Length: 325
Image 1 (tube, rainbow, N blue to C red):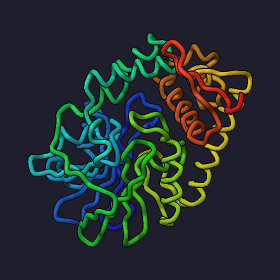
Image 2 (image 1 turned 90 degrees about the horizontal axis):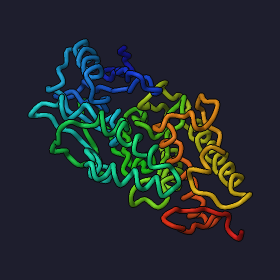
Image 3 (image 1 turned 135 degrees about the vertical axis):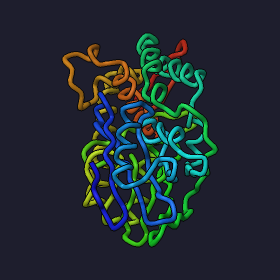
């Protein structure tokens, strides 16, 4: 499906088979010398076929376009390197670049990291083997063009300013359409679901970074936001406050889970409210357990940064307890 949002700017919904996200919103700006595509989809045949077909309805071929990738996740970055042409530019943020195409050793490290936070290795290993980022990520390397906060891309009558919004990933980057004060926001702000905030290598407090990014985005006062999934956001200020309240509630749940004693992140996770369909926690698929545990861990790390919880390690297992207990 194609929707024209502004003159020369279109939204393409690229289906994501068997994904709860349903589709990735890919945006195309056609006003410059070369079309600029903002985000693609999974690197899988069904996504490629749909993407090429929808671009064709705009009389665009994938190899004639340039690409801006908001962040490293495969449902945004996976397809771009294999469909870009020899003359295409793919803009990518510097902080996410080391994980644009992770090695097997990274996935092994991730499995062991989750095991140290209480997730059984049998679950974490399965989750890593079937992780969308591993099986649907970029098939090839690409000489990405690194962009930074404040950089501007000019395409016809439109000026797009890079706005770094760390949190969902280490270097997540939005684009502010300056002439209309509208924001292409990737997964930084979503209207119908909440962005997953998880733990990241070398990030001490990803949730704290995300909340700061939300506050910085609010100061921009965007009149509309074009997210990476689901519906366009018409009231950005209201949605930002909703997201902040959501995380406040989740932090309260994590504190409540620790009241009866110290726990690892995997033990805290089932005690939090999730929008998942299951009778028992053991019934949850390892991939969903992984995402949920990562989010619980990000909240625990934030509480640790706020000195509300303390940690200790016991036989390779990381335990959290309320400060002062």
